[in-house]
Structure formats: structure tokens, C-alpha cells
Length: 129
Image 1 (cartoon, rainbow, N blue to C red):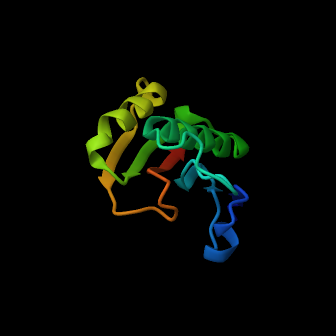
Image 2 (cartoon, rainbow, N blue to C red):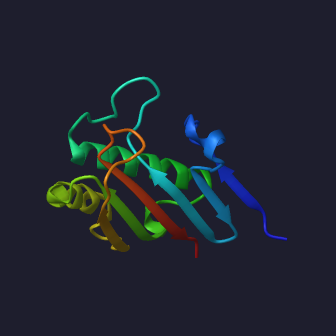
């Protein structure tokens, strides 16, 4: 039987909603929607959407490391933004990390995230060789 490995971020919403930051089953790793949220204050980066993007990607990288993977193993990202007119700021921050990895990527505008100060949320899928 394949082992199921869970990664927790410690976010207050995990036990309420019943999810993990990341799940690895065999070669597959799925990282849940990741933001720049902090427990008791504004998000990392404040209203700088590019910095919120960088923080989400740092957290995704940390979750991947916990299950023996890296950003190099990412094959797909999904980027949710609350203001699509700021796509270029988000895209450039995403490109700082993924310019050479080039995963399949989707960017969508949504009306709001769980905290109105959050401007971007990113999911990632990875596969190990």
C-alpha cells in the first residue's frame, strides 16, 4: 500500500476545514492553496501583491521540501488573484521562481479570499521522477 504523507502549515483553518498544506502519495505531491497569511496581523507583504506571491511560493517550496521534493518537481500551478489587473506583478514574481522550470500555469480572478487583505493564493502539483 502507498504511504500517504501529510504536511501541516499550522494554519487555523486546517482543522476546521479538514485539509493539509500538502499531501504526498507515491510520486505525486499536491500543495493546497497557499497565501501570505499570518496568524494575528496583516499578510506578509501587506498590499504588495508581488511580495504576497513570493511568500506563497516560499511556503510552497517549504512544503515540498518536507516531503522530499523541490520547486523543480512542480508540473502545474494555479494562481488565484483578487484583482486581475495586477496580473503582471504576480506573473513576474511567479516567473522569478519558475522561469526555467516552466510548469503549466493558470491565473484566475476571484472575488475574495478567506481574509480580505489576502490578494493571491497559489496551488501547486508536483511529481517526483
